Length: 207
Image 1 (tube, one colour):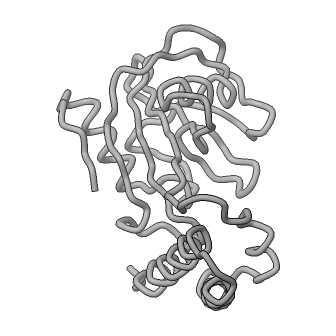
Image 2: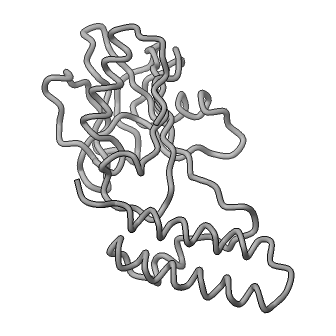
């Protein structure tokens, strides 16, 4: 696995600069935190291989204390213990349903909505399986700092059909997974989530 420490250190530099901008009480300190933030963005552009103009547009103006982004994902199994997966339009690869958490929705409300929007299936949440910090796993480099909440869900109804922003939705056995969208889910994570669900282990994995 590649050394991810430089990327995480750069994210930390940017977070410290953003925090400083929130609490700076004079122009002298604000200018220096803005310079530190600009340095962080330039380094981030080099490490993540994204143009700095895109990163500037990507990050909203800092108005509050910076915190991690939250991604919610749902593991759904059918009667044959096959895994419900969706095919992303963006890269053509597969993942378990989910996405960014929205303000105003609980994590469980969010994942139920995401599953239905992406696959047409109505579900309910059984329990939380795992909380992943993306820096602890070999995902491709990304400028955001992300926590991933992974829930076990069961089918309550609906008809399997891909949502408007998905290429496809289907069930796959754990022994024959499609090519995964590694920015969203890794095979090691999927294997772990599957074991936690199948074995009935009630522990919640947390990095």
